[in-house]
Image 1 (spheres, one colour):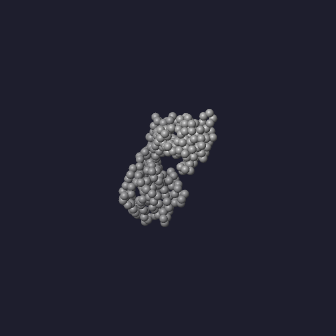
Image 2 (cartoon, helix red, strand yellow; image 1 turned 45 degrees about the vertical axis):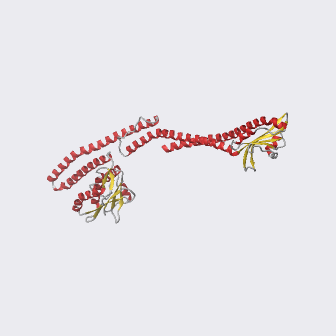
Image 3 (cartoon, one colour; image 1 turned 60 degrees about the vertical axis):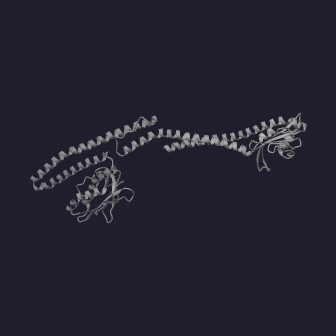
Length: 456
């Protein structure tokens, strides 16, 4: 945004300079030409006054000091001719006389009593000349003419100097606008950047983040107040929700434990025909207990404000292998683990352990007896990061079931009894809090490849 603002300032400035400076340069160039012609005319009038008496007598004017001084002016030249057009004074060739200049257009005009000025090509000199030619006359009689010339390069040099000054001025203006534009853009964008950082922290789950309200335009300060109020309300709502679910889960523990104990006592003393019903009631009580624990875990995962931290993925995977291998063997399954050393990723503390535990728990429920469950950690195929796979060879799920498996309380129709439908929802929440993703893929040869992808 800062770059776009600065670019807009510079675009407007450059456009304005082009609109103003180019016509101004053209005007200055014409003024330089007129100024040079006026200077030449002034010098010509002075020479006319000094040579009039001599030319009227038919004698060459005595202007050697003036002609010599003019000869020192680079490019300038004075030529004085009599009434026949023959040279009687030349600043380029002091003492020269007799050359016929009557064929020069400007000399011819001056000898006819007119005044000539302009620019023409000199074939003799091989470049353009700026000239002024005026008659030397008295009482209506032309006694001769004076011509002063300058190479057009002299005018071009003056024009280039003018353009250079205008370009230098434009450069100073652009630099000044750039510096002022940077300050203005920073003043405008800094509050926006702060709002963006605050919003990003809130999106990452940190509802304690607050935007500063003492900087920026009034509209941005008002927006910061609104953002802070929204965050405060969300924080209060989330805290209330977490407190409710946590309290409900905690409050359910005691009556459920008491109910389970009474059912066990009744089951021990009840006649045989009541045993199936009591066993079913005790199983449902256990399921309610697991459901309350899962709700509590899900609430904690959703409300976690912990930030992802670097961790040794291979170490965590091997640790979970050691913890679950005896369980798998007891259930008649085998746990095969592959976790090369050096794999590192970012995750909320404890999140990867819970994700692997949930994946392994589900895999052990569906894997056929005698099969092998693979726990694999590897570099992500999509770029920087790490993927952890738990692969079973159970019945698997179709694409729609794999998509819905992370929904809360969703369970497949043929799922083993006793589940709560919250395990994978907890996995998804923990993966998201860690900046990663969780998904179920179809395993080669049948079954499920449960994957969690973490950033490096």
